[in-house]
Image (cartoon, rainbow, N blue to C red; front, side, top):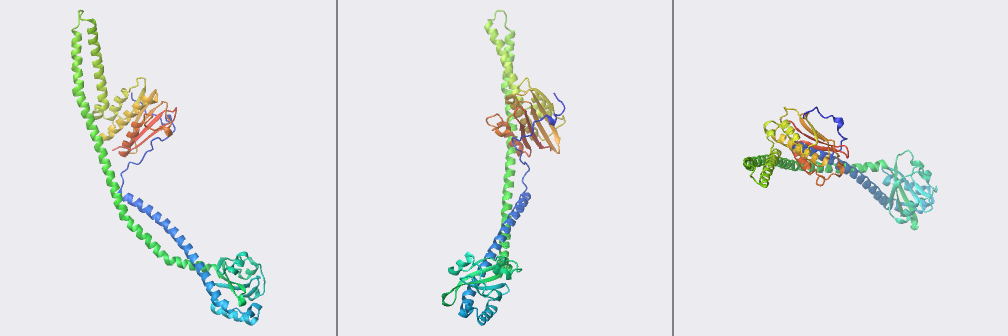
Length: 454
């Protein structure tokens, strides 16, 4: 019978078993647009990573250049100008070294020059207040005395020997072990503005940046036609699949109708004729007819008529005539009235004027048919509600039972009797609709199907 719509509060908590997927057709322009946005983001990330990598590379190259310049300056300019008088602190020797540093070593990025002996005493500096002062030698600088290789580090401005460099920002010191008169070990040290080093690295990075940007833009331009072709192929493949699906549904519909017609005009008519003849034979029996023969005729008449009813019920399942003549509402009424579990209470709420495209009406009917078959076979339910309504240009069919339910997380479909619904769910998705099942153990099951209304 028909009744009012099923209340949403009666349904169990949502647990999606068959997650809905989009059924909208793929647009080539939309796919290309999404590819372009994604590609732009990827290129942006690659570009940012590339810029950071080039920035690090430029800074490291600038530090390496500063180290090489210190090696050239220390060995090529300062070391030949060192005299025993300079090591003794002679003012004229210090003045001579001042001229060498001022004329051949000084640069805008250079802050300080120092020359140490192995005991940690400053034998020369362009800041004369440091000359003759002794300071503790850090371990890495003591190693540089004998290694003969230049090394760099950020200067610790808080150290006493660096107090005259304070207020200059970050300072990078480069130190190099050299040899003085008589092979005495000395440490030559230059202090440079770190901002000048990073600026040099930045200039190197900016030199290569146009190449990186150009390469990324060229890559993006080359990918657009490839993406367009791929999107066109995907679109064509999807259209072919949809045409094949529609052809398959039409073929199934025609084949069902042919089988139903053949059964009705052939086997059912033959059985009906046999039933009439057996009925006539039973009417001719009298008291002289052997009882076993009369009983056999009676049983044959009964069995033939039951076979006819079963075949007619099967014909309705295969090809419901009410679906074509009277629409989906009447077909669902007929389907529910013939439910295989006689004790199952049902109620249907379907607007009588609901009319859809024949393919969609057939699809919804098959969904309801398979759902009710599962309810009767597996749910152990006492009641089922069938509701159909229009929502925002769509038609939604819900079938809810009060049976035992199941755990969606462990439902496999093949072993628990729901494989038919899974297959129908794929058909629903391919028709542009959505399909989901909500269930929980002990709380019944609700099936939702939504398809476009046109």
